[in-house]
Length: 176
Image (cartoon, rainbow, N blue to C red):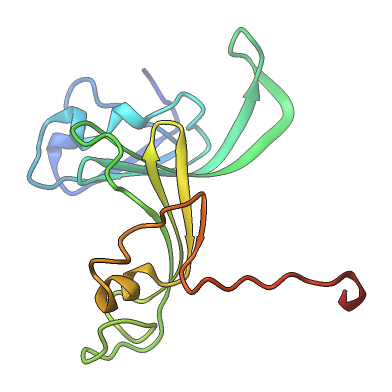
């Protein structure tokens, strides 16, 4: 599939094998030990609406940040109807990973810290974990640190919305 006006950047020529095409305006391909073109460009998670954005592929996985244009039943783009998308996917084997979408905050690095913003890992604020083809569980809190403290109890979010420390504050309308 031709994608004129697109740019592919990669650390290996295998990324430019036959059958591999730019999946968006900018595609960054990090080639690891698996040099199969299907895994290099992670085409199994690709969707045709990934046009105006940045596509990240590597480690047999994919991410995309960009616009998703609405289309009609024939696949034609509808004017002025767009969503902004943060997308992630996994490819076979292990179709659901767990490959998480995580939000991390970091500050100055301290090699002695095992968790939190000063650690190499960073402070995890939230994670999204696919559990099957129809559901993603959302965890609020530092599940990475929870796994260090309680490795047999805290693994992944177990509910559609899982707050690690169990606290949620409800705003009262008179306080708004």
